[in-house]
Length: 271
Ligand SMILES: C[S@@+](CC[C@H](N)C(=O)[O-])C[C@H]1O[C@@H](n2cnc3c(N)ncnc32)[C@H](O)[C@@H]1O
Image 1 (cartoon, rainbow, N blue to C red):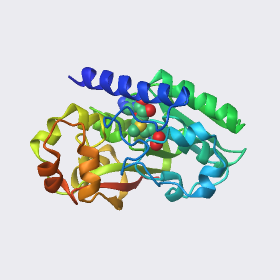
Image 2 (image 1 turned 45 degrees about the horizontal axis):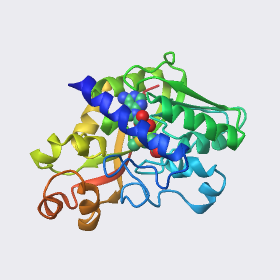
Image 3 (image 1 turned 30 degrees about the horizontal axis):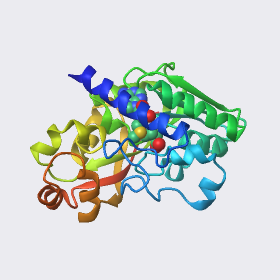
Image 4 (image 1 turned 90 degrees about the horizontal axis):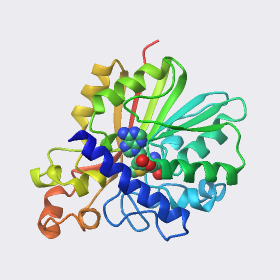
């Protein structure tokens, strides 16, 4: 089951990457990815000053639900790892913040996303960046090697979130920060939403509740955990992200309004 889920996620995000690479409008594969050109989850996350310094295709490929580098307080010389780096938008922004003495890694399991990200790196002309192929549940970096983990709307897609969080903990240096944007649930989601593969790929069905996120982070060993909402999805937003799910959009949108949010999740590995 979890391998099927992973294969579907890889296939859909591969489609999204190919669409952007070939000059298509909007990154998304229909309603069934996080984000897209008019998706309430992914629109208007970055300032004009941030996007002005990026290649157009890095911006078009943005499928996140927040702006983790704006909140992560990155410092010159730090090593940053972006889990599920997609077209590379947050890796390129991080690379500028950590400067030439720092390094920004992007990790993604989807070959077409990696190809797009590497092309965006070339266009941006930054050297302190490396895109790695791999899964967030098995990070191809040594223990205690990273100052800051960022991620943007990816952990909700994982079918083994415990493993993803324990891997994040493993690669962080003592005192290292977890500074992640993700979809988070307040209260309960209807069972039909939780069962929907389309809505899993769309970053909603697999999202953790606030309590589950905090519990999993603490079980992985993190301390100073916190979750701050950055965008709470209202009725029209819910209708938009439910479109194409096969569920009765008008009914289900009312049930989920206010329960689904983009949030910034922070935690620290003890010294
Ligand atoms: C919603 S997109 C977000 C991309 C990027 N963070 C952004 O903000 O534009 C999810 C990305 O995570 C990748 N991904 C999903 N599950 C993954 C996993 N288990 N391991 C590695 N990458 C994964 C997908 O290939 C895709 O590029």
